[in-house]
Length: 255
Image (cartoon, rainbow, N blue to C red):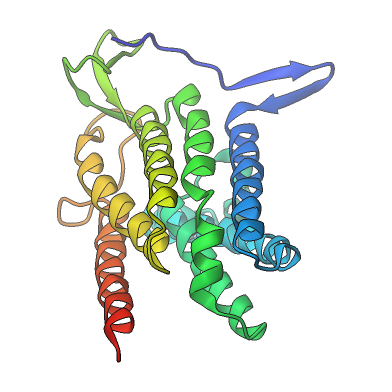
């Protein structure tokens, strides 16, 4: 059993630092740096990558917020429209962030008239590591409690119940996927396979992990027909990943 560590913020002089926001920022910077190294290794334009990352940062923040508003708490934000901009109160969805990043990336790279898939593979290389680091922030504030369990990674919450903690599982999942990416480097996989691997691995794992989320208590995810919005988005990721896998295999076998 893992101890319950609640660490939402700390102070540096008069300044209060929110741990979740700090870990997300660190995750983005570290993930971007790793992707930049992969860009250089492949002989691509590193300066262009950093330009792209600025757009990804903006689009992912907007997408994460919109997805949460539209699919997790639409009635609340309809009743409190001025809260839409209050991102410091929480309410961001990683799935919306991914969607925003994808849209921004395709738009940016096509405007630059470069091979979208080459840059997509390199840009996504650092994402699992950055994502895992960001999810450490979720683990410290325990904003994704799960159902009761006797699993050895369970956490005893203040109410005395041992629960799954999705923040813990998701940051471990990010690190595991990054380890898989490092293994793929040795095998020199074909173009597009990092993107495909991310879509399939994350989509499948997130779909099943969300079944462990709490169904009662103060923090409960919205569900539609027994599935969370993230699970529906996961099905979209899996479908798109399978399509790209087929597409890249067809391209490889063309005469």
